[in-house]
Length: 113
Image (cartoon, rainbow, N blue to C red; front, top):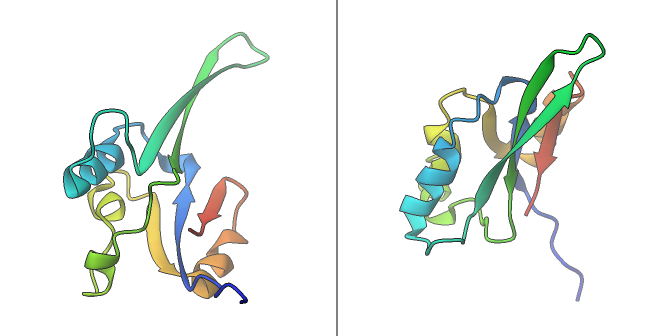
């Protein structure tokens, strides 16, 4: 049996993530996850630049536990991580529409469960 293509996904703009972890917290609260289980995890990456200064980047990354809050999205609401993202760097929508935005810049990723 052929697997159905996902219709919806999550667009994440890494350029604007501030590392606030509100996506992690909102997901954990929405699903009452036990310690260590996360639907999304924010990774912190330190980079030393050629001039010797340091640059810190944050990468919110959905895990295998992420199911994009179907109980919310079927009601026309956003997934918990998107709703509570303080930097407004996440967007939920159709893969077709989000992929158009993905072409605008390189520091974005389209995650599809």
